[in-house]
Amino acid sequence: MNRTARILLLLIITIGAVTVGAWRVVRFKERGAINYVSNAASVPVNYTELWARAVERVTEDRGAMGGAAIETPSQLRHYNDRHWFLASQVAEVKKFNLPSCQDYVELAAMIERGELVTLPSVTDTYVLFGVGARADDSAFNRYQDGNNVDLYDDKSLQKLAQNFVGRSFNLADPNDRKVFKVSMLSSLRPEAVKVLEEIAKVYSSQFGRPLPVSSLIRPEQYQHVLRRVNRYAVLIETPPHTTGLAFDIDYRYMSGAEQNFLMAELARLKDAGRIEVIRERGANYHVFAFLDGQRPPDELIAASLEEAGGHLPEESPTATPESKVIHNSRAAKKTKASATHKRQNSKTRKRR
Image (cartoon, rainbow, N blue to C red; front, side, top):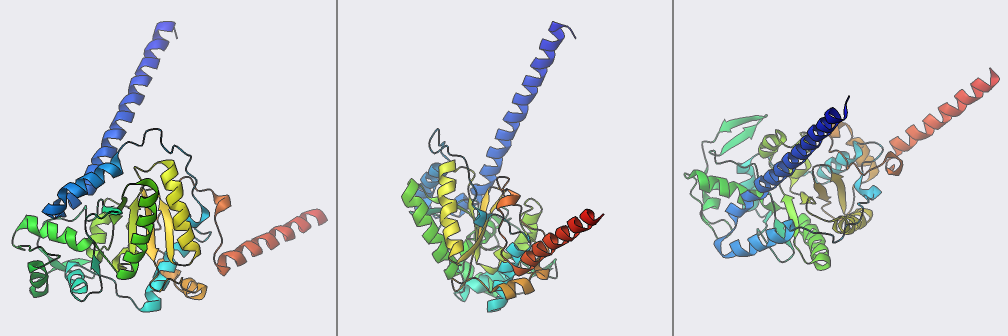
């Protein structure tokens, strides 16, 4: 190949790399816009400017600030038995016999009964940033056995819509229906709200910006819709987000220093037995708050392993197999048995 041809080939490769990089940046920004536009529509008029400023703080360029390498602690990685992560959350559901939320009708009923707290779109310490991003403006219906069923009585919905967090929604209007859905999806159980606020206060005090919260309660009906575009939306019998105890924190715009600080706080809460948590590749920290601030016993978690056999959230690519922690007797026994087997094989080879 002559010199001119080599230069031409190098030029083509360079242009291709730049084009792909630019496309990725554009797609990333598009996804970010889709993620938080849902909350912009649900923000009360008197909070619009406050919410917009909070989003600016979340997404602003960090520049050279806090450019530390990201170090994911073992507490935010999968266990040796990867099903243990979901099983601990399923065990909590069993421990308190918690019902999972099936659809928006059940979600409305839970809110009306006071089982869930609806969070404001923005506070001094956190901002809802993508909650209900896949909510649509379709008519409300029930969700039974994996199918949408026509709703013949929407009295509970109508009652709640007339006065929901100081706002009124017309369920005959498509835009109102969508905003109402997003508003209801902005809810959690009080115990989980307490944990979220504690984390947000620590993060906000340290960095002077609100904590971006990207997901709260998700009825199974919404979970199945989300699953089409989000592989981290698990479809086991009782997905964690359907309980109102799980929430996601968006780390896409955080610097390395911010992430390391936040992960250390999450690790501390996990060590205290108050939460289950993992760093997902999908740019989120998935946090599950235990109702009484105490982790379910290992025996109950082990008994829940079979029910947690669905798709598992993938750990961060920064995780390494050597640093994963064994948290259950089954994995420990398996490791011990494997070591014994190796020693026996070694002795056999020596005799030969």
